[in-house]
Length: 135
Image (tube, rainbow, N blue to C red; front, side, top):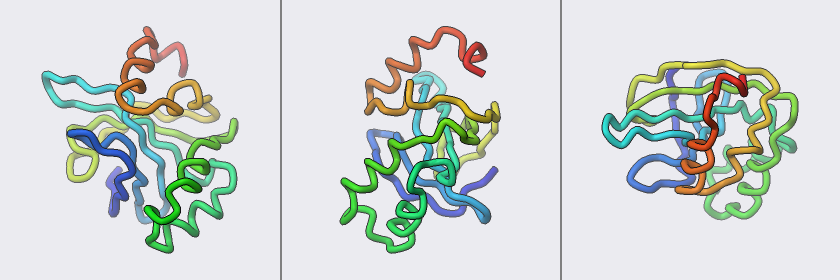
């Protein structure tokens, strides 16, 4: 997997949340874990097709005015359908690094984790003792 374009939504020494585009799709990616020793990160990446009102989200992205539509954008990104397709992606750099798909999942309830902001999202995801039990 390789992203052609990235719209950074949240940054704190690393990309926390971003909209990442491939040739075929756009994904909402959110940092789940960060190894401070190796700088390896794992992101949850969800196709925006599986967000409620994704047509409005696509309009905002295509307009190039994400900052002007910030409040609407944040609301739209928080509306994840129960039916979805998502990936866990491992990388040192979401924007320029090699991306390794660790897992693929259908219909995962990401609202348990992704509604938190940095650094709470790292704390919340670290409390998930065995990620494989969620898969």
